[in-house]
Image (tube, rainbow, N blue to C red; front, side, top):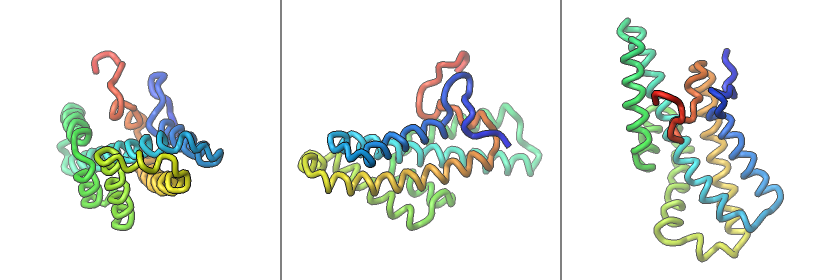
Length: 186
């Protein structure tokens, strides 16, 4: 089995990025760094949305490849085209739609979907109604929000990591999903 923390072409893989962000959020909480709560909450909201989309991409692409292989139809060219189409699709879907797709494809269960729905709602309040602006000086409220979002991020990270291990292909850990590729030909 391939180590999912493989560094691909000198760039960190998705599991390494997940770990780095989780460690940074944990440090902020452990050190009670109240000045960083707002930044950490906003970072984690964005990260939760992106890891959910990435995990949907993994699940659908992997299931498609397995189905095509069983049917004897999969070629590297077709797999690459499908993967590129799914990457584009998953990057562009809204958070609410990503949550529902993840639930429909068994990526998440109903309890996690409900937690994600609260995160999504709070994220929308943050962006559209400046929810955090009025609470930014209230450390306990900010800490409670940060703790809840970290719990959801950890659940999603574990789902994503388990799926990466199941797939067992190191290239799946490329960070192209989150960031534009710097590799030639991409």
